Amino acid sequence: MLLELTVQNLLLIEDARLELAPGLNVITGETGAGKTVLAHALDLLLGGRAKPGVVRPGSSEAYVEGIFELPAGLRSEHLPADATELVLARRVGADGRTRAYLGGRSVTVGELRDLAGELLSFYGQHEHRKLMLSAAQLDILDGSAGPEQIERRAACAAAWNAVREARAELARLDELAGARERELDLLEFELREIEELDPQPDEREAHVIDRDRLRNVEGLRLAAAAAEQALAGDEAGALAGLVAARSSLDGVRHVDPELAVLAERAGALALEGEDLLSDLRHYADGLEAEPGRLEQIEERLAAITRLERKHGGTVATVLEHAERCRARREELVGAELAMEAAQAGLEAAMGEHATLAKSLSGARAAAAPLLAGAVAERLADLAMEQASFDVVLAACDPGPFGVEQAQFVIAPNPGVPAAPLRDTASGGELSRVMLALLGAAHGGGHATLVFDEIDAGIGGHTARAVGEQLRALAAGRQILAITHLPQVASLAARHFTIAKDSAAQTTRATVTRLADGEVVEELVRMLGADERDDGARRHAQELLRAA
Image (cartoon, rainbow, N blue to C red; front, side):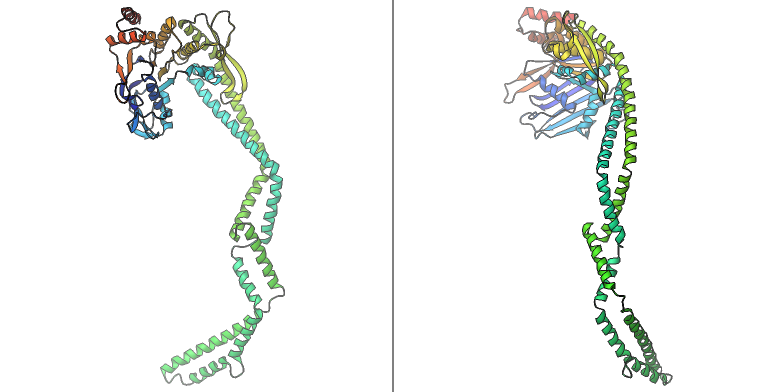
């Protein structure tokens, strides 16, 4: 139940606070006084889009707040477990930006919308036009079948989503199979090219060193020979000198310790010279490379370079590409098996959907005559006692909500053939049908129902019948009705009026709760009479006594 509604700086309304009662609450006022502003305020609480220019001129923002009594079983992660009330709010800046609040905490508009939808249902001036849509009629029928049917709908929608996903996967695999031979040929070629060369991550550097040595082998050989000659050339070689020096010092090294150290160094140099000479000769022998070795190295480096250019610039990226090719090849090779699995998955999903759709259909077949009977009974109370009403189920292609669509069929007058609601009912009749449907399908709910001039196009005795229906619907729940009919307003448990004051520089609308004595004055105005009209006053008093 909506306990309190606060509206600040929203179009004509500078500051309004409505404390609502259980049962039927009404809001009345002259055309253009601002009743629609209150309707827009409630729409904002439901997460609706803020209309351009809704902030009152001269204000930086508009603010709407609703305090709700939490129904049993409704909980939110944004609220303490023991919370009994919930505050929903929206701020709309002059720049059009909005902020949503739930329990004093900032939330997304989507989060506000999800929770507010459990607390408030809004029916605008043209809401009855939605009754012409087959989807809306199916929603109402399923709603009348109880919460179990809503759970079946959710399960059926989930199953249909699984069918769509399975079909998409099968189509993807089918498309893949059509092109896989060409792709496989390319993958095999690229893999064979890489695997036959078998490049190693660090081989380029080694090949470059070998190539440079082989390109300069003659110069290296001459250098090594010259070094060998310098070390071991006949009697003038450096090694012979080092050996002679070692021999000279060895004979007297025991005489002087300092000379012994020098003799030790001379011996070490002689040994190093002998090792160096051996290594030089070994190096020179190694330069005698096998014929064609340089050409082999040049060709391999060129092949590696070609692969690097094709696949990323380095041997590492070439090897990564090869791994991707292998994985893709496995996927393509296994495409046929995957298609068989996908086909089996699609058949299983379709079977699950068919089972759930059948369950939906059975519940609809049982609920349709019950809803039709309940609506016909309520239409009789709404001055349409001669009308016949039926709910017809027609098969349709499988979808998220089953395999049939609902169609409301009505014959407003005797002797007139029954026809779909969209083809035969007038605006006033649609409004009454909507009330009858709400009474039949929503009688047990807890959400506050808001009607914005749902009684448009109705007058006379029918208006009184509509009011009675609204009051009956309000038994055990809360209804807020914006109305222009005194017959409806006279039945209210609490009555608010909105009046416009254009005397100030900026027009202002004021919302006032009417005391019992003030209701008569408002009903006289709604009857279109002057406040001094005694006949209108008696009529207003009679309306209240009849309530």
